[in-house]
Length: 64
Image (tube, rainbow, N blue to C red; front, side, top):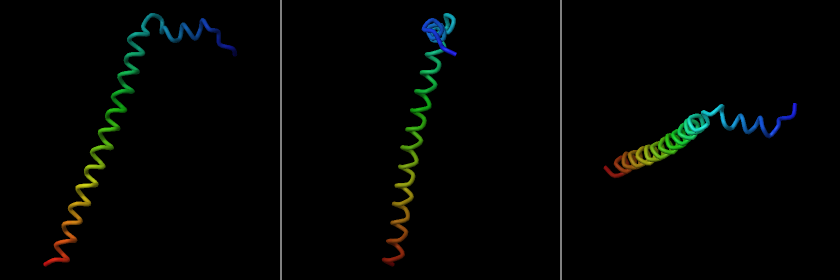
């Protein structure tokens, strides 16, 4: 089945609702990327805090 240029154009125009549909997709993808980056940042910060806490605990055990 061969798609014509007109059918691709009709698909992209979404029957006149393209501005709403594509902006919703764009907003969703943007928010998903931002949320993923924030989660990565927070998890790396948490790992650093855990390592710092473990280092302090180890240091206290070594130096009474």
